[in-house]
Amino acid sequence: MGRVLPGPVPVTLVEDIDLSIGEGEFVAITGPSGSGKSSLLYLLGLLDRPTSGSIILEGRDTAEAGAAELAALRLSKLGFVFQFHFLLPEFTVLGNVMIPMRKLGGAPEPELRKRAQALLDDLGLGDQAAKLPSQLSGGQRQRVAIARALANRPRVILADEPTGNLDTKSAQTVFDIFARLAREMGTTVVTVTHDEGLAAQTSRRVHLVDGRLVAQGVNRH
Amino acid sequence: MVRPLLLDLALTHILGRKRQTIVSVIGVAMGVGFFIAMAALMQGFQGYFVETVINASPHITVRDQFREPAVQPVAAAFRGGAVLLHGLKPRDEIRGIRKAGTMVSALSEWPGLSVAPSLDGPVILRYGSADKSAVLIGIVPEREIHVTQLEDDMVQGHLTDLASAANGVVMGLGLANKLGAKMGDSLNAISPAGVILRVKVVGLFRTGVVSLDEGQAYILLKKAQILQSRANVINQLRIRLQRVDEAREVAARIEALYGYKSESWQEANEGVFGVFRIQNAIMYSTVGAIMVVAAFGIYNIISTVVYEKSRDIAILKSIGLTEADIRRTFLMQGLMIGMIGAVLGWLIGFGLTSLLASVRFDVGNAVRNDRLFLAWSVTHYWIGGMFSLLASAVAAWIPARRAAGANPVDIIRGAA
Image (tube, rainbow over all chains, first blue to last red; front, side, top):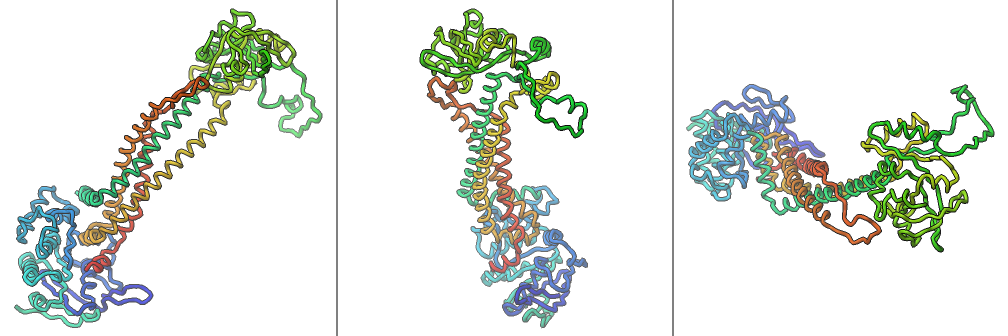
């Protein structure tokens, strides 16, 4: 699989990527800046389309899927966490977590509210539910973002430098949550990080250099 | 569940820019409000005009004229053939409606129709040193009463006084003023036939239509026939209908039956209605211009929101909202502004119309109306509302489409 940005001077983001990630794996994508880590993650997250090759999610080739279909897959199967929390500033913590739920629907509003509250409780944010994101600390916001990513019980969590703006302690909390999700819920977690210490805590590492997959290794704990 | 979420998003967006939103709403409201007031004013005036025309003049006028020149026997015999007549001299006929008497009695039988015969012709009215040309119309007062509102327009005297006074004449107030004549004054009427009749003013009328008030006078039909030297001749049948709107059809029927040119009030005032159409076009384009300005306001606010909220849009798309969802969110904002603006505009329009309705003019006695005529119509409110919704939808559509098409990856990369 590869992705080339078109233009007068085509830019290759990633190329010759052949990667298979199993259910419940906790994968770290590492590499120097500009190596294509994030690009690979966006491709895996169906936010971007590869220019060659394809992405197969749960046995389904997504190359043929239309934009609306990809959106539906993102909604129900994938959850994103970015370096920046991207919480909507006008919505409360609970409101933010509920956005994906309300889009997906499937249950009455009080039920969704209860589920969102449970998620926040689980991440230690139960008492922050009514606050606005601006009233939280950086680490708390990122945990809210994780709660939002988990809102529709996705099969895969995709995180792009989720700890980039956090102090060591908060970063550790985020990784602990990821590890627990993978272990207990069987959720696949793919995270981009340049923190060696954190990458070592994952179950598998994928190392990119100049858009190419140069090394893979299984971490033994 | 989806709609409330999008509505929620839309609301937070426009509530986040209250001042701009209010300005946009006011812009739309002004457009709608002015439109309603203008429409009320224009349609009110047009309605007033039509009513005046309908009241002041007969609904159908049958004249001693034909629309087409008479068909010559040879042309009738070789219909469609190559017939060319040269040097044709039209027959010298006494002008007038033939067998007018039977026609009047026949038409009187038609349901919902009143008919009055008349003979009109030009005269010069002379009072002292003042000379005024006028159309002198010979009428039968008891019939005329049922055909025109002339009796209601009398400011002094009555139509029936024409019969009671010898050589009585009723004239427009404007005409009397120009002559300097007053009630009871005697003046000379001189016809093109050379007959001079001494007439006495027994009544004055004011219709509100200047051309009538300054150019018409009424006399008994018999006297008019003497004055014009056309004994027993009638050159006009004036018809009033119970159903004004049927004038066109009834006129066509009469014309088909008798051949004489029958003109409905619509046809007689075709030119004015043309002016009305232009007036309406001007009104709609003015309102359109106001709405375009308002639409720019909406476009501006939604563009700003789209720009400001690009991160939110990116995250919403990554969460799984579709392009259509995003588009709808911003479209809704435009429509909300349009809707609130429309409702506010209705209030403004109502207020303005009420204000206009309370205005009084001091215009002296030359014109009968001292106030603006206003049409209160729900249609104006509908049109105004539709205008604003359309403008706001178009204005919101452009930035909404841009927002929907935005690539979340670009935005997230830029933000990180």
